Amino acid sequence: RGQARSARPPAPSRSLGARAHARSPRARRAMATPAANGEESPGSAAGAEMCDESCLALLRERCSVRKCDLSKVMPATHWLPVLLKKPKSELVNDLVAGLTVAAVLIPQGMAYSMLAELPPIQGLYTAMLPALGYMVFGTCVHLSVGPFALVSMLTATGIRVLVPQPNADPAEAVRVAGVLPAV
Picture 1 (tube, rainbow, N blue to C red):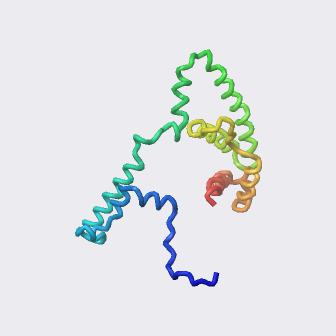
Picture 2 (cartoon, one colour):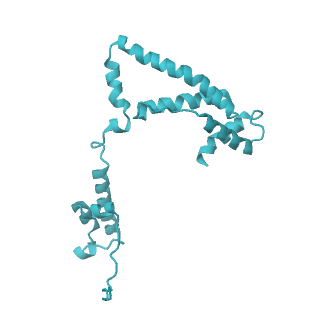
């Protein structure tokens, strides 16, 4: 306790990812100082070109399209070919499920758009477009996307602040509603 500790400066901290990256042979080559090898300094044109080439090589290695599994980003690429190979008689269940979702979402979307004091057509867009987008990019079978009552009421509150009479000027109300998510 009473002993004096050495006055060694603390080591610079790096994240785990930065340490792992610094250990890779390619990263060590990319970070090698050209001045130590008798080459141009990084500030010169040749040094900048060398840094650009090493960075591009690292990007090509990490972001190769060949390594990317498209079904991870777009699960529809996995199940759509299987669906198309099904006999037509087995597609009846899928058709009934799609019609059921549409029968629920169309009036629900129109009602929520009226709750948000927007034209009913906007409710159709907010009901169908998220469902179609999730069909292509979604990974959870049990997730429900689309408009919700609370979001509609909050949107109406935000619209009323900027457009006092949204029913009188629906085009302006739609423009404000389009900007609200960005705020």
